Length: 560
Image 1 (spheres, rainbow, N blue to C red):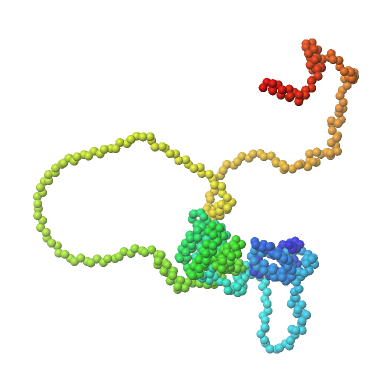
Image 2 (image 1 turned 90 degrees about the horizontal axis):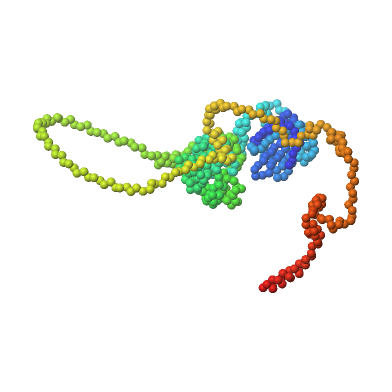
């Protein structure tokens, strides 16, 4: 890795359009010495590091290293390419020995001719006869900006330049694109902010999409095998039904599909590719937009080629340019007003899916003709008393069935299941934190608690051996100068004189002396003296083992 001497970091910025040019112009205006260091760390490639060396306000050398070390103009081109990416980090370093760097890397020097030198060396070419007539200048003088433009103006200018260079790529009705970058989620969020219907089916949880990309939670579905609100079950038919239902009720809708690798592991690669083709054909036919995020390295070459054929690849630079200026998306054909055919199709859908309302029919009633009143004669009739006979109804007694008494029904006791506190994993803890941040619930003041009594705690010592001078102030050479060395270690003399120890005689002891432990201690033995002396003096008889075994064998044979 080519690394230059470290100096003082004056400024540090993020990559983008025109950032390298701005830093170089600042160093040239200030006539400073130093270098600009660029660094990129892509996930699937080697780190890319470059340095642009500036000496006395001029670009003197350039070096770049990725897969190989480049110097000179080739290195400068690679550095300019890296600085256009947003993940590039630029550092302006000063207070370094530039002359020593140029001496160590002579091949990295750049031969740049300044306009002053070219003008002075070929001054005779610019000499011409001065005319007295008024003429229009062929070239207007350049005006240098004294104040830098704001960041949003620079982003707008960069997006316009990208649109001028790559003007052929636009979001059109029926477009289908794919990319592995997270910029697709930001693009979907920008399209939603412009009023487009959006549906996101992803392996990322809803809280992460809401916090990181600003997507509405109601438009996001989590792809999982669980059942619940906001979860899309892992089934191809269920996914198709959800997508088709979303497309029928919306015009020029946007669908972002993520997690194809997860689907392929469960449902198989071929059915997933067929589903992508079917969704792409439906999107193209109904003038909708389909965005697919998948990783090429997780698929085989043939499978990735089939997916790219169904959904062409969209460059990350184009996505970043669209996201840097969201207002430029309004000029795309996808954002244009709907056509008459689309309006008719939407009206037919609304008419077919709108429930019928009950309307009461108004019935006109005819006015009745006036009728002349008729005089009716009423005859008075005397009422005769009615005789009521009471008949006693027979009472029917129902037999009550006898219930046989038996053993009572057993009493069943349902035990309550023990509810244990669930230990959250690291991922669930992050989800809980994001959900708590999203709810924005205000918590009142906590009640004042009693202060915990303070307990005296002594000073803790580090688990290290103390230094010797802190414990033993004297040197090791004074270890012998102790109090015990001054004492006399000899025993005191006794009053008795010295006793001489006689040497034992070499003569054999007499056989009359009895050899026993008691006799050795000076105890006189008077009983069984003869037996004791015989037992201690008689030698043991040597036994021939073979002969003894033969005798035993003969005795056994005689007995049998």
